[in-house]
Image (cartoon, rainbow, N blue to C red; front, side, top):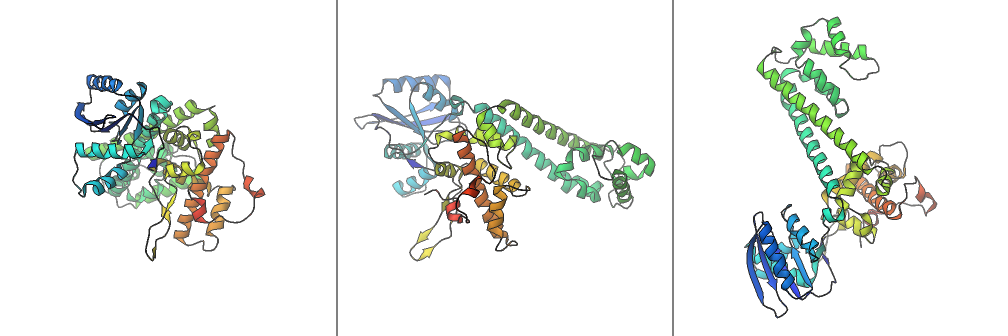
Length: 425
């Protein structure tokens, strides 16, 4: 992801090694003299740095290595003051430090010197501030949705690996993602198999009828669940036991996470509805409100990439190969780009290839046709489909249009090799 930027040579070079509370600053003036100092992450220190840089010969070019979100406040202030701010890749910094000092030792002053050397050589990345670019709110909405989904998944695993094996192990086969909401309500009312057996079938049917979700034959399904509870090996714990109360507490928390995630998805749709970029992404098979939100939040304005290969490289969907002497390694994804963007397109690809009819499924079937049971070939086919989806998304947003199914059928037929499908040369 590190690129060489042919920027106008600066009169003053500034390298900042970012930390949580203090930053190491290294300034090189036009006469070659260096000035080193440390600054705290405080408003008064930010102001002192800005005042100092305004006194330096212009233009001033600043680089830093991103560290979590600790760099965001200082970078925003420097950009608002009109300075040229860019990033230095942490991988490039580590490799250059080892080559420059012939050692793995590192400290803040040494890191600042490495950042300065890479800055002067132009080995930097463009920095786009989300708040200035206007998609800071989308990023926070997307990240919050991700954290809630992660918490929900972890809690669901806890329910399936701890609570259900203790109290109602046979019910695990009913606990699927598509049925999770109503099944959580059912478990709050009937947390154990013993609580089901305590009722007659008629009484259980009356109480469970409105709790159970939509079923083709609900009466038969309730009968099957009742018979399963009668032969369950779950622990015979009373319904008012403190252990069952902790189980219900986790189930209620699980319901809250589901409600919060759905509310965030509705907020995202309401916020983005009507925007051309959002509508273009939503027209692609497999991309819903949440995935469209993730793409726009992580990539920002897709039109800032001059070519779809740059966007593929930003997503980490470009290929890399290791070669030395007679050894020729296999081509594989570089995975150097944005992991959440890569996940979004991969997840959308898995949805699209399961739909009834679209060009993404057609491409997937062409790849797996020689060996449909080969898991490795399926993985490569999904990779090619995810890369194609990223290219299509970039093109639709760039040209402000919507997806047209089988538009490429008018083009020359034939399967595109995997190296060309995700190539970024």
